[in-house]
Amino acid sequence: MNISRKALAAILCSAMGGVALIGGTVAYLTDYDVAANEFTVGKVDIDLLEPKWDPEEHKDLVPTEEIEKDPQIKNVGVNDAFVYLEVSVPVRNVLTSDKDGNRREAADTELFTFEAGEGWTLMQSFLKDGYQVYQYSFNDILKPQDTTAPLFETMTFANLIEGQLDGAQLTVPVRAYAIQTVHTGDEGSTIPEKAKEAFDKYMNQNTAQPGAAAVKA
Image 1 (tube, rainbow, N blue to C red):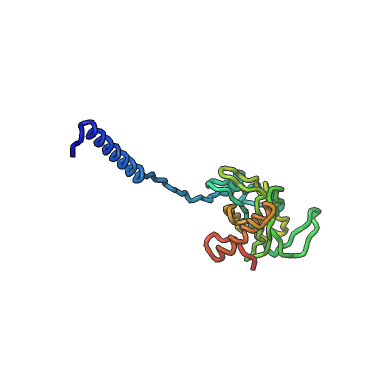
Image 2 (tube, rainbow, N blue to C red; image 1 turned 90 degrees about the vertical axis):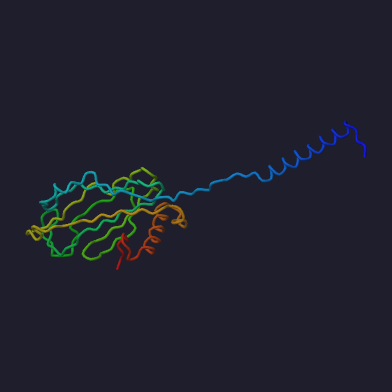
C-alpha cells in the first residue's frame, strides 16, 4: 500500500497523540493522596491547691481557733471538666460549751466547722468511719488552666472543754475529683445537675477502686 510521506506523518502524529492521551489517562487514574487521620486522646488532670494552709502553724490548737485553709482545684489537663471537693471532718463524742460558756452534754460533735462559698453546691453529706463527709461540686465547668474559687477560706475548731483531746492528732482529709464534661452529664439542665449526674456515673464506675470517692453506708 502506497502512503505518501505527508500521510505517514499524519498517521504517526495521530498515533503518538493517542499514546500521549492514554498515558496521561493512566497517570491520572493511578495518582493518589494520603490523608493522615490522627487522633489525640484527651487528658483530665487536676491539682488540689491550699495556698494559705501551713501545717506548722496549727500544732497547738485551742478551742474556737480559726484556721486558714482554702482548698481549690486547678485544671492542668487539656479537657473541660466537672470538678468536686470532698471534705471529711472528724467526729468525736465530747463535751462542749456554747458561745456564752454554758456547758453542753457530751455528744457526737464535728470537731471543725466551715462555711462553703457560693460557687459550690453540696451534693451529699453522711457519717462514715468517724468522719462527717461533705461532697461538693463546683458550679461552673472548669476549663484548662483555670482555678476554682476556694470551697472555704477558714475552718474553726470546736469549743471543747476540760482538755478532752489534749495531744491528739486530728486530720481533715480533703480530696479532689475531676470528670470530663463530654458524654457524662447529658440529662441535667443546670451545671450542678450535670455535675451530680457525672459524679454518680463516676461512683458507679469506680466502686471499691483506688481513687474512688467515699460512699454512704
